[in-house]
Amino acid sequence: MNWFKDIISKLQSKKHVTNYNSGKSFEERYNDLGVFQYDSESFTITHKDFSRRIKWDDVIQINAYKRDQITIDRIEMEIVFDDKYFTISEDLPGWYQFILKTKEIYPRIPKDWDIKIIQPAFTSNFTTIYDKTQLNINK
Image (cartoon, rainbow, N blue to C red; front, side, top):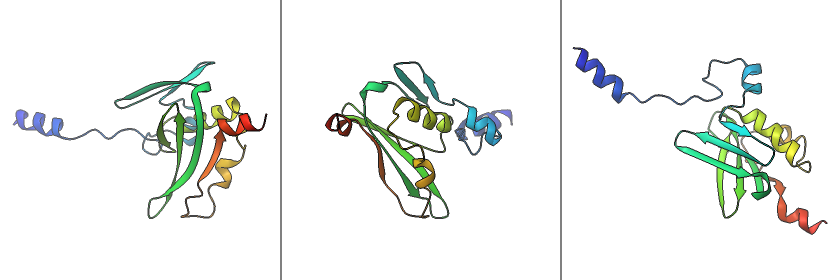
């Protein structure tokens, strides 16, 4: 019967850890760097089979919005760099520190965007919080 348990345990997929199922308190989640690593020139995100180092100077645009999850909204962020982009959400471990870091690196990001985007509920509230091309126009 042990062989049967071995097969079943291998077939069961392991649930990935999110901010909501980590078992950590809010304070621990808030202070956790999660899947991010930082240095003065870049950040690295490593999650599941995705790993990417992105220089702060290569970020062209950051868009934030909410995705309707029927009973709740989930805040998501698109990070556009070079000719690529990826999306992260508030479920991702390290989200809170990443938000703080982006506000530090890009001082023109509105300090309260993450509060304002919450209301009204169940609307996307899509907003571009950072656009490198607009910075060049305003110089």
